[in-house]
Image (cartoon, rainbow, N blue to C red; front, side, top):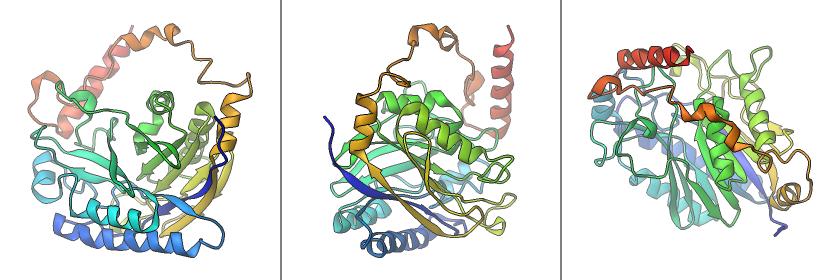
Length: 334
């Protein structure tokens, strides 16, 4: 049924130094809580901001290259004191917050660190999304795909009063299959939390960030709210971070975008859920979700990437990721 629900979404990019220990995470949260107040209050004369999204690594970046170091110095459980602060703010303003990512530890999966973003609403923690495609070989976060006894939803979609919300993280978006899983799960607003570095940003000729966000929107008939790191190179060497956070509609039109380049920025655009419903219900052409010939995709029946725990490895490492990448390439040879 078509609804007339309209609201504003805010893509909030940050420019913060990276904590070296978990005790410093509260400083990051302080700043993002302030940005929530600014977005909701500052834009109130123009319309209600109901959804806010923050970038990957906004709480902590994987500045250490081993799982043990990340577990020892930066990883936190979820829920935690920080998610409680977001929940209080969500209840105060009646908003939904897609948090910056945490480096998460979970006692059910010992020895692993997840790259996790949380969707938090007025009633609390709604979904916890763990990055499925870590940026290998450098990231040693665990993917749910690689853990044999993993028992949580891999592609959660939250049915909320502002629509059905799904999220995926950074490199996940280079895999159309990943975002299609969210769309087939009912997602109407696709949220991208990213730390996408130069040169693959919002500036031609290598504007992967812009191209991919627009393509994932139009091929899934969904809004995209994409927020990217705007960190200067000094905050996360050796990379610099181009920002360019944006909101895209279901036709692939950019509704709002931050100017490319580092810096803290907030961009807002209207989400019209009723218009989206009409676009999904009325036309018969360009119905990419309804036109899927799923049975034709026989290649997906054959495994490719084995995961960084290849060969019974006990812990992820850059070396094991390199071995797994080579194994995946070999499987592509026919």
